[in-house]
Image (cartoon, rainbow, N blue to C red):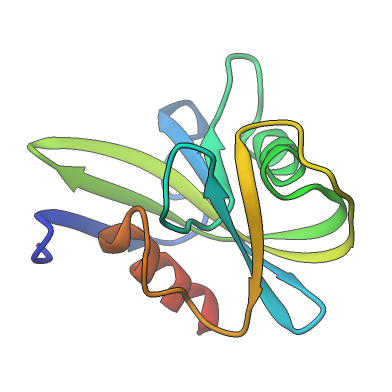
Length: 140
């Protein structure tokens, strides 16, 4: 457990069945920088991520969320790992991708207020107990 009371556990790709996955998170690079987004209702930063919708595969959710949150039009996805997050006695499962982004567009029409391109993880994170673990895994 971290000081935030959140435990994030990494497992090999495909360890968690797709039907158990709730989230996708993308460690996305554009040129030489990482992509981070700020939701319009928050002042903190996040890696592009979101829920897997009914009838959608994790890969489809990753492509959709990259577009909705960061304006990514074209990218290459690599499934890095599956993960489990336990907070307040509840465990949820997700899939982490690394995305090499070839093309982005603006303006954003969904919930993202701002996109940040940075060489490092921002200090003000929405979900620090999860995002630090996932980002560091993507760096390995």
